[in-house]
Length: 417
Image 1 (tube, rainbow, N blue to C red):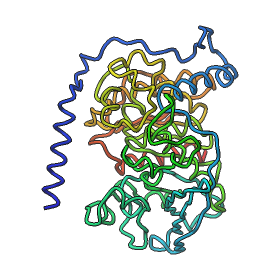
Image 2: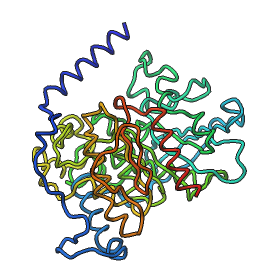
Image 3: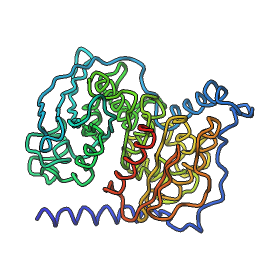
Image 4: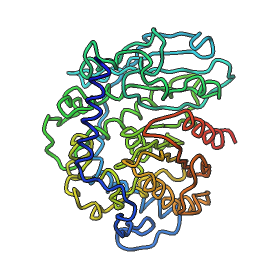
């Protein structure tokens, strides 16, 4: 019965997307001109890292803030940490597992979130760490029966829902591979920060900030992607208190909508030394102006709670947006960034993702770093491992062992050399 229901939902989703007149034909990609990366708002040329950091980077960050993702509040929200479970012999003794409850509070209201951490036991000294959200709860990333359910799961999934089964997405989290390579890993259910539904905004961390209201009243007010990015930075705050974690070697990995949030988190928070976008597509790594796969109008229609209201004005006017995503990726420089695509994930526009990574390279070159040197996409399973990394693999929209192998190799190159 459950399988039949899931099949019906899948077919319905496929039909809905098919009705949105999405272009999957490369020959129908319009001729476009990307907004300048190394040219200031008044036309001045940017030719030094000092000009980039003091002039152009702040300009671009403000454009993404005001026109796409919304403005992250500068006010502080109190947070306390409580270790709920600690297991020094997790994963057959290879790791120490911790489950930490975050309680965010404004003095009147509280929001709780649960962080799951695995830290390798056989490493002397501090270890680098990968941070990333999961989609179905920490329990979905492992079969370990001691892993607690995420606080907000009850708002999203009923008690008999398939997603309450343990390990439903453990294929996306190869903890053994990560730990064996000497990395810690920390994950949290993204619903704990903003339950992914516009009707549940009241249960998000947005509701803790001054001026919050259920209706958006300010055109650049932040929404879900901004909240998820903010939450990633709060995970870093906690990890900086962990004795075994190397705070100078923090990587963030996000898949799909969380790939979008990972890029936005990395643009704002320079503590993320490696930023990884996995199949992030529209609003993530893909170029808007290609109008291939998901577009601004489609994403705003399907997910009206992700971006700020100013973004709505670019529905069916993608080419008029004053930014494009190569500029977002460039905001990571000189830190390392990696973009990954999947061959059959046309919805996310693999070529558009690659071209963003390629065009961002001009800023990396200002720093004397190695960028992607050709606009010809690499072949399947031929990763590029420069200061900007990229691969396209066989398969669908997902996180697979091959992806993790590439991310670990990329981290080894930049964290251990």
